[in-house]
Length: 153
Image 1: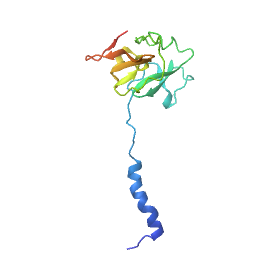
Image 2 (image 1 turned 60 degrees about the vertical axis):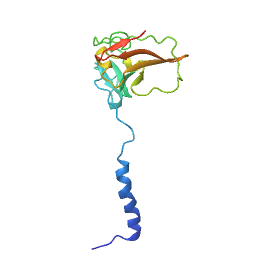
Image 3 (image 1 turned 90 degrees about the horizontal axis):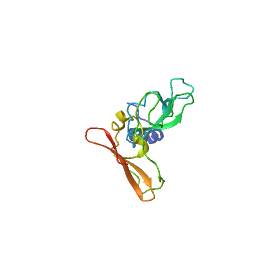
Image 4 (image 1 turned 90 degrees about the vertical axis):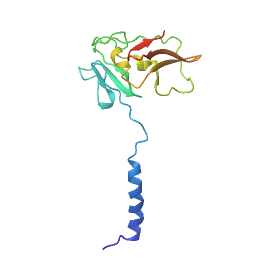
């Protein structure tokens, strides 16, 4: 039986313990579910050069967020109805600001996470939706027990 030279063993043994630890992902993956119709994911190479993309979306904290409206992609995806006929909640952002503390924690989400198709809003991990105002966090919508979004404004 051959033995490893001492110097090589000093390199190999710590790596044997470090590699399994390197595989642990400290961040929980939160899938966004189905992307809005005619939307393309930015993180997977979607571009407005693709004629099938009406808008580009980014998956952030378990919700699809509009990254860019594609020219010629139809109606504005932030208007009440998207090019695919998907009805979206319209939330009044009057008085919205930034810097509210403490930060929202799951299942609380910013209001923009609710501004997607009515049918898919409550399929995310979000339950309550807030905007940050001068008075602090204000509830603007929530998912009821039937899985439907309810606007509080």
